[in-house]
Image 1: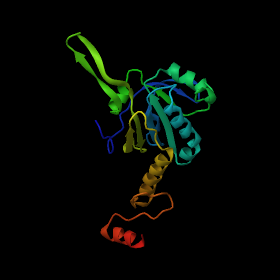
Image 2: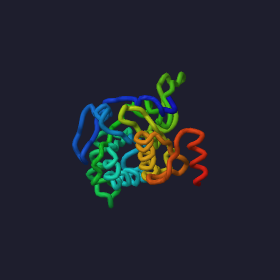
Image 3: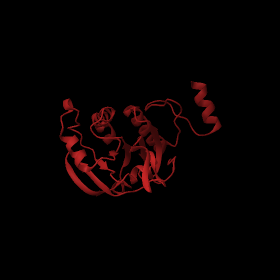
Image 4: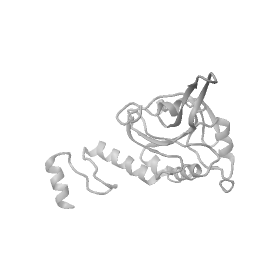
Length: 211
């Protein structure tokens, strides 16, 4: 699929851990359609190094997303039991205790494949007559901003060593919601409170004249 912007976000049903320790079967993003925006992000593995910094950063700003009617949902190829154990471990010990947003289990790797963030692919080796995986069987650091109609409006995919910016994610939420409310588009480095511009030649000229 590659670029999902402008397309319906691939749907799924999977095990998840919510509220810091509750198991949920058949967790789906369907529940948010018509109600909330969603930031759906992938990370490689539980109990690693960069991943907890991102997850804890999202938790720290969770109230900012909730003010904007945005649900945060994380996903990795780990089991629900691994998610649960990580959520119970203290932060000083490398855990993410205190995180309350859902963590989805993608053990089958099908969710990662459907969002095109799997860091490799399955292949068939004729010599051994076996299916093999070429690459790393984990997800890249993909992030998808999904609107209330279930359409992807923004995506970013980082390689495994490169952590993402939660503040940039908030900025993109603000930009999308400003456009939806006012019909004006958001220029480079736009932040909430800045001037936007009308999507006309006159609007662009007026904006450039002020800047």
